[in-house]
Length: 220
Image 1 (cartoon, rainbow, N blue to C red):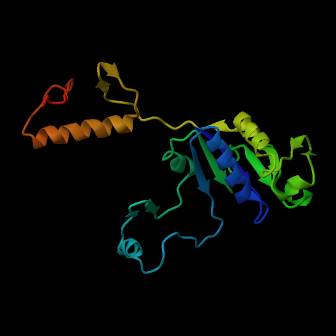
Image 2: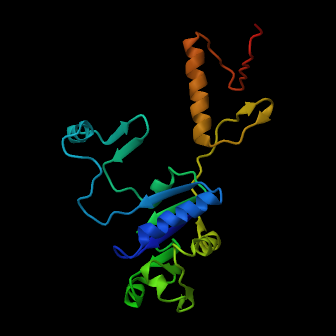
Image 3: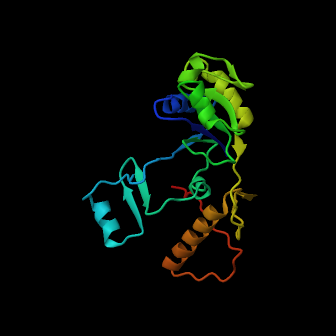
């Protein structure tokens, strides 16, 4: 999973640039996730008086709203970037407004002064409104995220960093059709727990951990 951030002041072209980055990455058959940093102390997604708001006020420390087409999990705290990214399993995650020093960045600005205010060694490209006025600034390419999005995404492919998650060590091996299946430790745990519950419901007690379950289609 590769990560890059787009930073810049309000109305400098951040979100428009990100929209076009997402579209171009999807055209290249990458899976894409995004994270939006909100620089507002009192920000919250939930609305006063909703059922989920009442859950929170009653003391629930984690609230989930589950609908037909969307599921929202509301943490009552600011999560670290590493924790947030642990929920993603995409080729690219595009961050908006995230300024962590370890993340390579595209800087959007209105003018050169806006570039200077936020320019540091992690910026590998300039975009947004100022990109219509210059092609290069201090050896950093300035690329319009609307008219030259392919060129900008080419740079993203070269400069985005790999985000390595701390992998939970697998305790099980899952074999399907005689072949070991390469899946995450979390999914292995879920599958094994599900099978344990199913066998218990069937009144079976399996002592041997090396257990195979065969499912065949019945001839009619």
